[in-house]
Image (tube, rainbow, N blue to C red; front, top):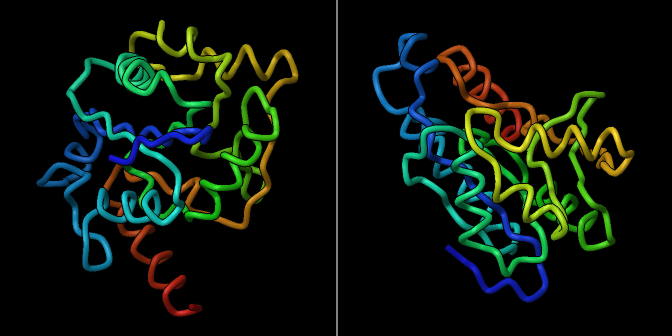
Amino acid sequence: MRTDFNDLPCILILASGRGERFRASGGTMYKLSAPLGGSTVLEHTLAAVRASGLPWHVEDAGHPGMGDSLAAAVRATAAASGWLVLPADLPLVMPQTLRLVADALRAGAAAAQPVHAGERGHPVGFGPACGPALMALRGPQGGAPVLKALREAGAVVPVEVDDAGVLADIDTLDDLARAEVLLRARRGSA
């Protein structure tokens, strides 16, 4: 984990989930350990995070819900100047997308969210004023209630990105197969 903040938002990699939908779809292992393009789902996510140059924290303590996991991660990185909430099962998010969301926060956005082809994705960025609300979260919803309140106040900056990885979470074996196709297409065009 890189947590030398230097006035940068911190990427919170949420890896506490049990992957029940993945197993229900026929997966025989923990979804973050599933093979993807010669590595694992989690290693792809971590590679993008490391390449972003931003500080980061992995929250994998096995919390009962995403809200609990997010609250613990924010508490562990309370000195950060904001947070990018990245579920660990988004292995194809690009490093430049992470930097763009962080840049929106550094420019003063209360919250920022990447948008690809008209769809909102992850990571969702939260500015430092959101810290107390994020630390108070509990249960399965994650940061959705905080984001909803910010959206209703017109305080969420959309960050347009050319990155389908912001939408490509791995919840089922079919999702993993689609991610493999997208990864091969990216590598073929590189």
